[in-house]
Length: 394
Ligand SMILES: *[C@@H]1O[C@H](CO)[C@@H](O)[C@H](O)[C@H]1NC(C)=O
Ligand SMILES: *[C@@H]1O[C@H](CO)[C@@H](O)[C@H](O)[C@H]1NC(C)=O
Ligand SMILES: *[C@@H]1O[C@H](CO)[C@@H](O)[C@H](O)[C@H]1NC(C)=O
Ligand SMILES: *[C@@H]1O[C@H](CO)[C@@H](O)[C@H](O)[C@H]1NC(C)=O
Ligand SMILES: *[C@@H]1O[C@H](CO)[C@@H](O)[C@H](O)[C@H]1NC(C)=O
Ligand SMILES: *[C@@H]1O[C@H](CO)[C@@H](O)[C@H](O)[C@H]1NC(C)=O
Ligand SMILES: *[C@@H]1O[C@H](CO)[C@@H](O)[C@H](O)[C@H]1NC(C)=O
Ligand SMILES: *[C@@H]1O[C@H](CO)[C@@H](O)[C@H](O)[C@H]1NC(C)=O
Ligand SMILES: *[C@@H]1O[C@H](CO)[C@@H](O)[C@H](O)[C@H]1NC(C)=O
Ligand SMILES: *[C@@H]1O[C@H](CO)[C@@H](O)[C@H](O)[C@H]1NC(C)=O
Ligand SMILES: *[C@@H]1O[C@H](CO)[C@@H](O)[C@H](O)[C@H]1NC(C)=O
Ligand SMILES: *[C@@H]1O[C@H](CO)[C@@H](O)[C@H](O)[C@H]1NC(C)=O
Image (cartoon, rainbow, N blue to C red; front, side):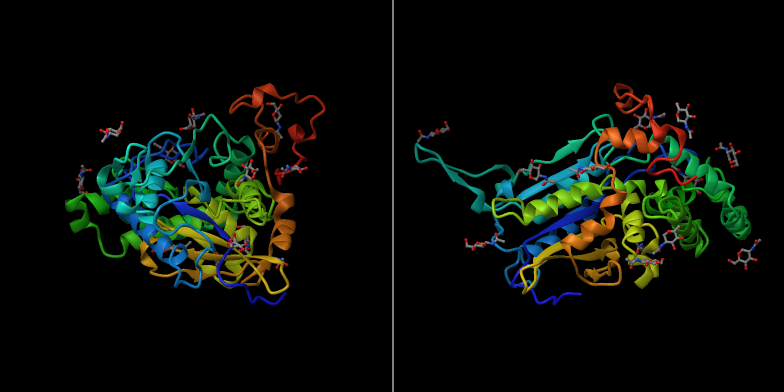
């Protein structure tokens, strides 16, 4: 490993932010297809707090993680690139807006003087309107790559008949039986919907909150963490279970690569997403080897930071940090491949081969020939169609 002494301040950061608290939703256990739900006031607060935390960390000149030359109070929109999954409900897109309101809050400094001398302050005491690229489900699979992915559905089917799943279902059976009266219309089998139902009811339903037996929420979370860890990882880094991060890594590489260029202006790249890419990311980078407790679902308002700096030899380095929602008040340093910091070249080199960087590659990696824009490609002579191409580990 190279010397990690860095020049003062960061060059930039890529942030993966999970949306805030939301209303209940339905996610099909056999496909993991779902529509988004709607953000709640609690979720808005969580994201606003996350934005304030990021402001203290990256926009405060006294912070060791201050980003060189970034505008601190009045946003320079050329320095930010923000993208959010916009499919279905509004929870992820509105989470991005709430985060940005905490990152660059309203300020009278955002006033502007017109040619005729009038001074104009934006509404709401100087609200700062930051552009967000909203990615619709039909536009690209990049942020929703597990949906309508045929090989991912095979992966789920294999998981449900695996000995570890059957074993865990057996272990969970007494709890699931006891939980049945608290599940409403939800099946009391080991599935992703159990914790979600319990959590939403426990947060919003007073009777439920007062009658749910102690530890039931934590037990439901335990099984959900176990299940999601198995759904969104795989035995190899380019396995189809890792697909949520495999389609997001290209954006991360491009963003960090751009930040190394002198012509670059973007210093903060924010991807507002759901919980799945966090699980895959921590697995493909071996972060869960050093910190096994991060293998579960990231809480609402969680964030992963990939910080770019330059070491004394002039090499660009990447360091990964994580904050598990409002439960953590500070970032936690993670290790990628055993190191707290690795060169950008090594980061890319270790993961480039796993990436899915276009809709075309996604169609082939998923054996999807019709939906999500895949029907325009020519599949004749295609090795992927027959199950031995990238991504299929059957
Ligand atoms: C910050 O600005 C200084 C002075 O303009 C320049 O020398 C330096 O390269 C800039 N650093 C970054 C990371 O943009
Ligand atoms: C999957 O979910 C998306 C987004 O909510 C929706 O547009 C699509 O029709 C769904 N696909 C299936 C096969 O249900
Ligand atoms: C200056 O221009 C603005 C925008 O057109 C207008 O609202 C304002 O009344 C003008 N002020 C003066 C002093 O003419
Ligand atoms: C489940 O796995 C554990 C070890 O992980 C083992 O001790 C236990 O016997 C297994 N239970 C069943 C029902 O297979
Ligand atoms: C409940 O789970 C069982 C077993 O996985 C499944 O056969 C059944 O279709 C599910 N019912 C509903 C309503 O989802
Ligand atoms: C609230 O929880 C109680 C107790 O579990 C349940 O009977 C009731 O249907 C729930 N209310 C709503 C609106 O879901
Ligand atoms: C990287 O820079 C290129 C050229 O300016 C731009 O087209 C592209 O959108 C940037 N990509 C990212 C992820 O920042
Ligand atoms: C990644 O996930 C696979 C499959 O769940 C598991 O076998 C492996 O141990 C995980 N790797 C790490 C580093 O946690
Ligand atoms: C976040 O914390 C919750 C408990 O509040 C835990 O269940 C979960 O595994 C943690 N997730 C990560 C990614 O650390
Ligand atoms: C990642 O962890 C696995 C064990 O899960 C190990 O075999 C592999 O060498 C590690 N990779 C790196 C680059 O550290
Ligand atoms: C996209 O992935 C392919 C391999 O599937 C690779 O050859 C190509 O260089 C990648 N393009 C970019 C821009 O990363
Ligand atoms: C891939 O899709 C094609 C066309 O839908 C189908 O004929 C083929 O059996 C599929 N391959 C696998 C491995 O499922």
